[in-house]
Length: 143
Image 1 (cartoon, one colour):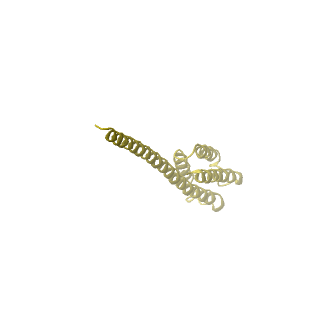
Image 2 (cartoon, rainbow, N blue to C red; image 1 turned 120 degrees about the horizontal axis):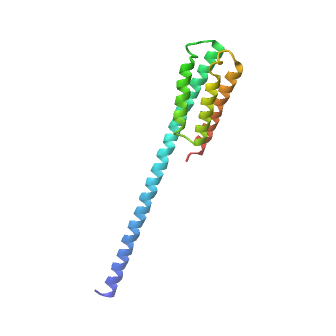
Image 3 (cartoon, one colour; image 1 turned 90 degrees about the vertical axis):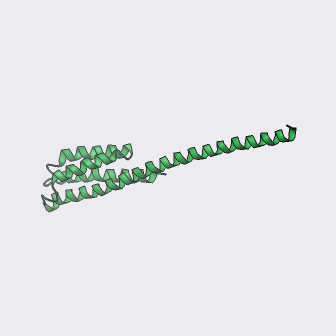
């Protein structure tokens, strides 16, 4: 083999090695980006579901207190919603999960006096608003 052929072969081999490395880096980045996108999508979906449950819970609180409606303001429905919010919060950020834990604790302390005590309503609504605020911050922080 002459020198010119050896140089061409060496150039070809370096090009192949560089191409394989470039493809490997590109593939790795693509997989990483897809994982991040999927995680962000799951967080977004959980946050939107939590927001829906929060509005439903707030409606239940108002029905129980202001309307005196025992059917729409049934505390058992409230327990289910609070539990679902706590479960969904595990799919979001730790800060939302902590706020959901605070809501669950607040609900457990005030659900019995909800129909008659304005302070109970204020405490529960404040906990609901705290989760909403935290969710908005989490959604803004996603890539």
